[in-house]
Length: 268
Ligand code: SAH
Image (cartoon, rainbow, N blue to C red):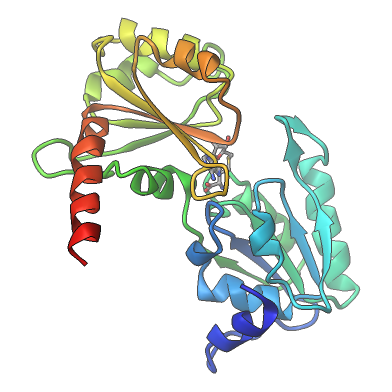
């Protein structure tokens, strides 16, 4: 979508991003079609777009021609800008009178430190607003034809961060005991250890698992596996990041749903 089309879909009653204000917005998982209209309004009005590495290039391309893009975020798991520095930068840009869009992949507050940045802006007296986004841990499932919930199969969905499998105090056995599907963010590096803990917590090794890499992006990849094999499969298929991992019976529905979607498409 080019700027002209972006402007065409802007609502007449779109909120105004005023000079000196910051919007903390989610960019969704990748596909610009999953951007909210409010985030789009921010892109078209911002003087400065401060974005992280996960924001898709096609989304950044929707920024107005007046906008300057500024990278701030993490690359390859290593912080390339300290969180404190990012907040300081947002405050500095706002105080200089810019219209600032802080754009994060997915939802700004889902493992995105949106809450921390909002508190820093508030403490500095900078006016801001938070715009929700479509989080990868939900969009990634639906994009892979795995329903987040399915009647008779699950009544809850656990979204968990998979860094530091051993040392972060998260009780993986307790999660396993719920028997509810688990969606892991940031878990590729610790996948073997996490899978191990979940099996020790009582999840059968044969529990279906799926890895969705770059959900809704041009290079999306989906690999279906089992809890026992998922870490080895990730390696064998040389899967990169960003990726979410889904563990639970809902993964089994993918084949049926794909079939149904194919039939639906054939019927039209
Ligand atoms: N705020 C983001 C999450 C940031 S944490 C959100 O709401 O989606 C970063 C992690 O998000 C990645 O390690 C990966 O697990 C997940 N992620 C983000 N975008 C993704 C995508 N397009 N496909 C798969 N996983 C993604």
